[in-house]
Length: 291
Image (cartoon, rainbow, N blue to C red; front, side, top):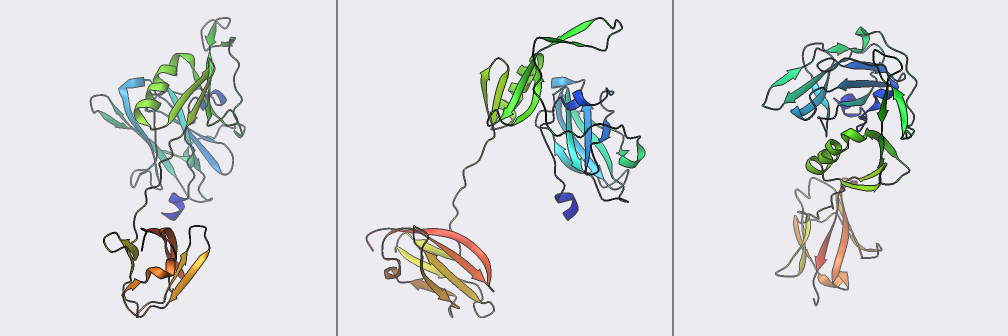
């Protein structure tokens, strides 16, 4: 399980199929060797908005014990992919795709083992270069002289320094709707060819400690420890500027009320609680003024 948890999943690989050969649509999918450390799983979704959920699953058995390694944020995108870290040599790994269509019908693709396909050589993907608009690309048509106009929107992360992927102009509305309705990320349109996504970063919520805390009614700091006779405890208190105020080493009582004179002033204070010389908790508390 630790090996599974350490696998690095690279999301937002939409439309990466520009760099690999054409493939069939779901339930079929492709596996490609990027290099000796990474495996690329890609698929083409013909259902668009009728596809409401899509996940890539992995197993070390071809039929059982599949676990989800990637859930698509925008399952309706026509092309998508994910990168998984290659297992050590000698370890067989299998993949399948689970997807749900509007109305509740769900499907599992056939499982495909990394060892069971003929690898197609592709160049390692190190970066994505923005495509230029107003150029005509040859499509897969019966007439080789027929061309298709493709206008690309470059999608960056936070700034123009990190290009995530590119979206065709015709799919821009679907992509924008997915970001707005299914994530808390912020999407900003810079110009006709540039979009910047600012990932949502939740603000940390402070949770009072159950071991060292102040009581509003008494404006006192209380220390409450479990089994002080069985463990070696040490508490270090810090002022608002990070300087150390004092320490309490190996308290004898399970509960102790600390005199406010030790804190000099009111406000926020932080502390480190060590149990058997290991940091058990880093937290803070507030004392009101006056004492």
